[in-house]
Amino acid sequence: MTYQHLQWTAEGGVAEITLNRPEVLNSFNALMGREFQEALRAAADPSIRAVLLTGAGRGFCAGQDLAETQGTPETGPVDFAEIVRKKYTPIVLGIRQLEKPVVCAVNGVAAGAGANLAFCCDFVLAAEGASFIQAFAKIGLVPDTGGTFFLPRLVGMARATALMMLADKLPARQAQEIGLIHRAVPDAALLTEARALARQLAGQPTRAFAMIKQALNASMTNDLAAQLTLEAELQSAAGRTEDHAEGVAAFLAKRAPEFRGR
Ligand code: T3D
Image (cartoon, rainbow, N blue to C red; front, side, top):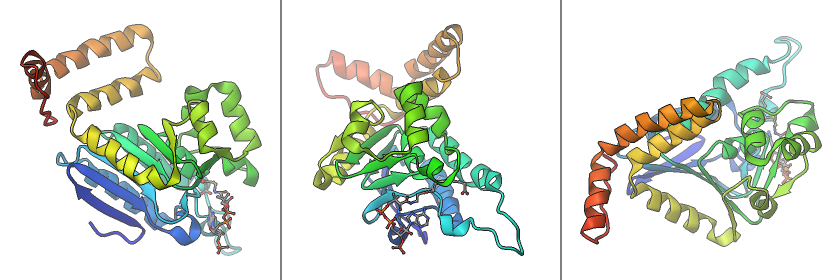
């Protein structure tokens, strides 16, 4: 797959997507937004069983490319709702609905939509030198890209409010301490660790992972009774997978299972 503002590689069941506008800390212009949506569609291919997302250069993603959203006297102000609906909403839904784990390797600063892009992924590993900023309030905007949905659920209302209104830089280590991300790792180990995790996930029962993701998504809004109903339905489907049969056979034979994601 060839893109102008992304790098894409696929090997051993893992698709690696690298945001690639390092000169502007991988901030999202319109083309990168479209290419990212295209890459998520490509990642739905059954040969891909896990996705790794990272950024090129010293930043992960500085959110919206601010140079692109300035209206002119001729065109008038830019409609941000249009940008959010067409660019960021499909990306967040694309990641949450992708039936495979997405590992985000935050290699540097993640600001605005770039931070919230990370928080909607299934696993966030961050380099110790990386940081997260809800930069929106600094320029008089409101968090988007799912931030107002995921942050209170990840860290509680009080911390989410402070992160959004004070918009301070949160170092990776502190982000781990408050449960915002999976793990902070030494800078030099980030890609090695993230790739190892993505490879590990790709070799696991990925049909079950798709269902776990579905159940977690639903748990954000379901009541207990609805969630229990969904668990029963998903368990029925999981119980019919080849991976379940293989898992049980391997357990009984005291050997390692060979999951195929079927
Ligand atoms: O607007 C809408 O359409 C609605 C949707 C909004 C979604 C959003 O994401 S709003 C939030 C947008 N993002 C920001 O406000 C963050 C802006 N960037 C920063 O605050 C800082 O760059 C950072 C704190 C992220 C990093 O600071 P630092 O000192 O490490 O780097 P720097 O020198 O500021 O940036 C390096 C270069 O990247 C610089 O260009 P230059 O001077 O070397 O030519 C800078 O202008 C450029 N850059 C950084 N962020 C953006 C950007 N260019 C365009 N858009 C950016 N968001």
